[in-house]
Image (cartoon, rainbow, N blue to C red):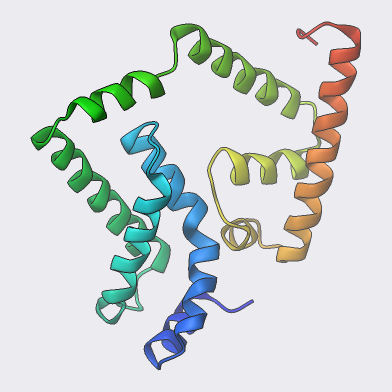
Length: 184
């Protein structure tokens, strides 16, 4: 797997298809940035596309001595801030209705929080090598490549640990569900 900087070089040399790999690598994290900053919205996919289009057109301004993901996430954060400013300037009845419909009830938010806590508790029962990659992928929203670099292991190992970790976590949760006791 090529690193981001090599892919950027290819894109800048005219290989527009190479940009798709950058999108694949970073779209999940960009999506979660949006979700965190803008809350629940029906147009997240459109905004993610806008961010990647903006990054594409400004790719020549990217300095290779910086981490591409940090540069891209800065674009995403700035775009979200622009969206928030737009929403403040142009409140509409439709937007207000969407926000009301999209809002979770306190009960739903509580249940989601409890589910996350339960999953975290079950993760504590896993071996550290599985727990680490699951946490990095699903709670820190890191890409396979980022996890691989942080743990200094090949990406194939990361994929294998994620797969086995999810399987072990699922088995642990199913075992608790069969007993009907969520405190274990």
